[in-house]
Image (cartoon, rainbow, N blue to C red; front, side, top):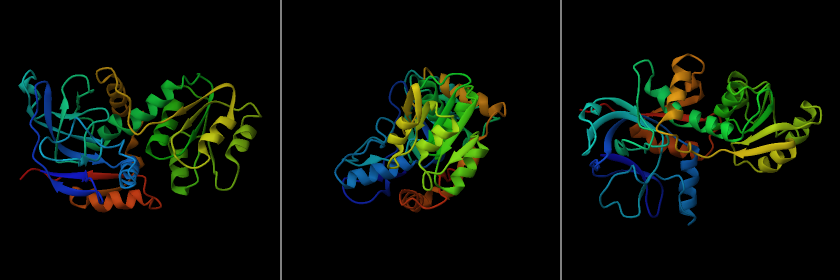
Length: 314
């Protein structure tokens, strides 16, 4: 099979890897679609500098002589191709997603239990399911973990896929006001589309001072940091009110309870409450995944979340 890997030295590249065999309690998934995460670019850059790679996939990757190479990616959906011992054969042929699992490879394995593996309803597209298992779930997990009070005010720093999802979550969790902090115009527009009431541009104004102005000097109840931009962390702490909280988004959702969070995200999408596919800005076939990763890692203006489509089996 083909897989997008981070070698011990050099740039990420597509390489041949053996198709992994599902171990007892696991399923083998044939990938149909995936999303690229900016964190994979940080992983590659960190590895090049000797800092390691927190964003690389581990247990769900291929087995065999991969050496120190690591599979990149963690947002993929697909169809169950095979099951290991102890897993019902009825899963074969089912479309599935799992929270925070799914490397950029034609096949990957995942535990049938404990990783949030969920069969997808026909009413949900693969594209939508990718967000339900990835950025949308991460945004909700961050907002819920911050204990945002109903009727409160939240500021979300960074309007990439996770930040936009956190803005959606803030609105759905009962925030009376959602303030987005983002310098890029395309992301600012998306922020307003996805639930923000106002956008603060840190390139032209002191974001903390503007937040205090917007809240009458009280500050926000919750600040969510979904960016590594310089100054965002400090501004978040300066912009919260007395007793306020600052939460930091991760690159993938914390494991849900048996797919509980993933199921909730799928219901939100299925009920028409939110359709996150508008966050996707580019589409690539898997044959061009190296180009897609390179452009995302370089911070190409206007690129937020690239969709990668895998070829159908011959």
